[in-house]
Image (tube, rainbow, N blue to C red; front, top):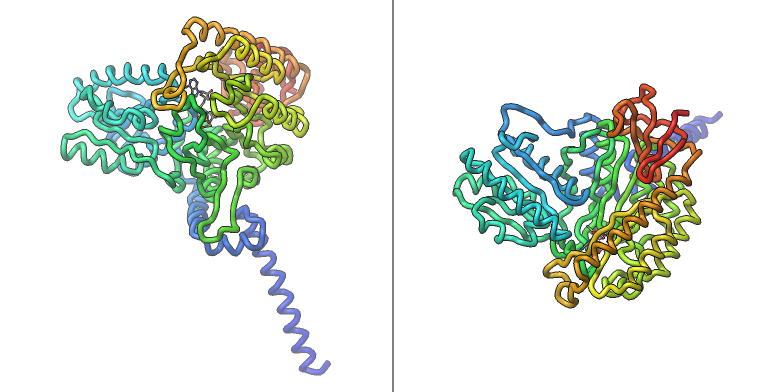
Length: 515
Ligand code: SAM
Ligand code: SF4
């Protein structure tokens, strides 16, 4: 063969080899970074958040500790957390920030140099509990010099300097102020003066802070995917205490999921006030966006052995794409928490919820059509302003029509500053509210039992959480649809998946045998 043809063949072979190698490399990167399109891939190589994500992968690979540092030599911080899962995750962020400042966690308030309460304002009784605790913190202050008492979170944001009036609290920090804590603590020590920071932010998501995990069992971790809320349900204080809605960059969310999975966790809970509104847009490339369904898929792909849960869904925003994504991935748990609040169109309108009864029931039908075994749970408020007996009956009938698996049920609590508080009279007498709430609870208990009876004979996969509370000889864990199962201890460990058969039930628990 002439030399020039031989050389051309060699060059062609080399080019083909180079092309295939590049394809392979791209595929590996796409898998590694959860990036699917070529454009996104190029973007990921250039983008700042993607670079941070790559750095964080190093942390994951090194399995850096994500549990509290329990170092006897460090000054101690004690944290009490009230309210929702989001507050639990915020306490984990707070601890992470304070650990970097040299503090270590203690569960013994008597040895703490900083005592923090991460608070909730959603109902009046939540705030009353905190006022009671502040009085008890006063005793700690009397016992030891230099103890710093801090109020964090929603109550700090709502009441601001009112919390300083009793001369017990030294530190008031709203939900977007936690990065300022080290400086505030230094200022308190230097000036012996209380410090307050309650500025809400349009973009704070604490994206790159790795929370120090505070859960007990080490298998289920909370991950905040967004903060704040742009809805304005007339009864709700959250938009005022937690500020506007903002979505966290998806790379940092996937990174955090990988981090907990690498540290032995088997389940992540993606948290937001309205997860269906999750929407991230790259500021450098407006065409690169991620919605909640796409985020769910990215997180589900971290590992098929890692379960994914999320909360809370909003009835007018939950999309077919989200429901279909759930159906496509076995590791996305088949449970949707879909708060209805009321079954009466008149009340829903007054509550400024953005759906009516018919819309809500259609969404439930869609969920059941795509995911027949999906657990559906809800939140209900009894005795909202002007609620008639008929409105209340509409709530009961809707609950029966849906047949919820379980529910969180509340008596309406007037929150100063909200639209309802300004516009409507809190006119349902306490006794009537309580009677209606009790009726709602009794109905839900019957429905929970019925829902559990429908599980009898089924074989389900359970993630072991630990010993059963009632009978430590037995183990307990949740099925994908969020039902709590109790079963004999077959030598399984916390974090194992176990197949069990539902033999009997109560309204709260499925009693199972091993299969
Ligand atoms: N973002 C979620 C949603 O809209 O469904 C719920 C968030 S909120 C922290 C949790 C629940 O508290 C609400 O669903 C509602 O049932 C209840 N809630 C909120 N404000 C309330 C109030 N003023 N009185 C009684 N219950 C209230
Ligand atoms: Fe409150 Fe409504 Fe936002 Fe939920 S969606 S946090 S109830 S304002």
